[in-house]
Length: 164
Image 1 (cartoon, rainbow, N blue to C red):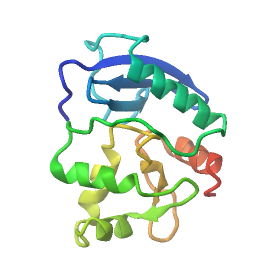
Image 2: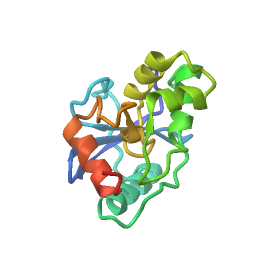
Image 3: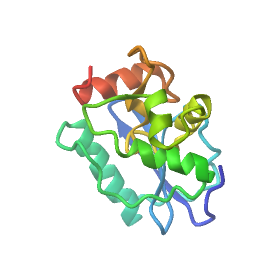
Image 4: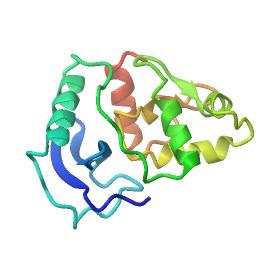
């Protein structure tokens, strides 16, 4: 993934661990649990805790984890992904809180029924954890399959939303 040179970051201490939250002038570009798979090297990104988008994102994440928010209202900057990845990430946004879908259903939803593995790879590289709800994608038999932030976090997020 490529990130815009104007990207800024802050840290958020969530109930599930430290998160790195990043934004550009276009919108929220990343939310990662520290140390998760596919997390970009963010060491050179300036820390700007007073950045308006970062402050808004952290406030909404706090509301979410407190059970007072089920949907996010933030502009997203997903331009770092390929067009295919972006289509998968946009489809994730249609999964309602408290709901789940399978990788196969998600593949059908974007018109790429045979691309289940590619869809799974794109889900795993979602740069905006929690807000772009990749945790709501489960195996076809209902199994809680991979999550870049760890299956314990996926379980906790789905429990918070009442999906399991």
